[in-house]
Image (cartoon, rainbow, N blue to C red; front, side):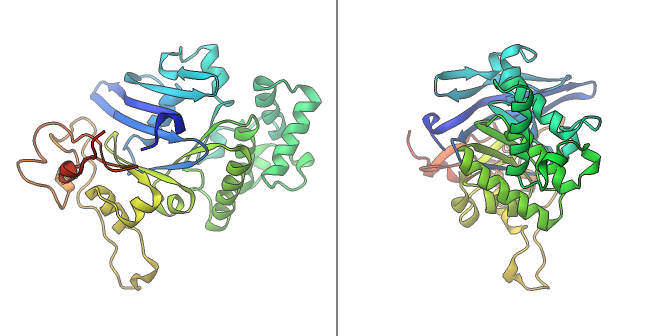
Length: 339
Ligand code: SF4
């Protein structure tokens, strides 16, 4: 795992729980994650594994009945660190960080865009709030950003409402808005899932280009391993609220170690597999959110589970088994690299 000095954001032992009448959902239950500087980290895992809640926790946007109950999230800046988990979630400091230093884009652009305001005006609002540019200068910057994300005839498009644009164009507008203040970290939550494959490829290429141009980190939250393989430098695999494996994209795709990661990799349709090759599925389903299995939470579904070892005691901790490659599984205890 990357060292803090190379990270833009450190998430340490983060626990975010939702307190419902039916019980407590431990959506994020001890996440440790370093988001590398100027690189892309793909966060993968099935629905409900805590990927998005981790991102919302960093932005301090966890709504009631959710609450960060433990842990630290630290934003590393040139001029010193800011502990985001210490900030008032409605306070001025976190509001100046959201949208300026950390931006977020979603699967559905209408989550970010107002349907009743022209797209140019919406970008101007963000620019005026977070930079010194005001009035016509802010609008010129908004139009420049629309051009930068490939919107043709940007001055005219800036005067249109979101419903007048296609889905792909709305996604581009959302990216333009997210990047208008040059954030150091872009959180992208399933940014291309709702788009058809051609537009998806264009949006991914655009994100890659802008990342290089702005020297920005991307936290790419997705269940699509194809997108991760194409975009990410680093991968973190999450299961039931924790990271169970993290390493470079090459390591995770070529030689995954955790049985859950291996099962995920086997479930990708292969080009060379032939038309009649059956796709591998992961047996069973994610346990109900109120009750966690004892021991390793993956043991009821794990093909390599060791009876009497995996189903007792605490969850296995994440250990470094080779430089830059961490796994949380009892099978690798002997391979732990001493710190
Ligand atoms: Fe499977 Fe046991 Fe490893 Fe969990 S700890 S992934 S159950 S082998």
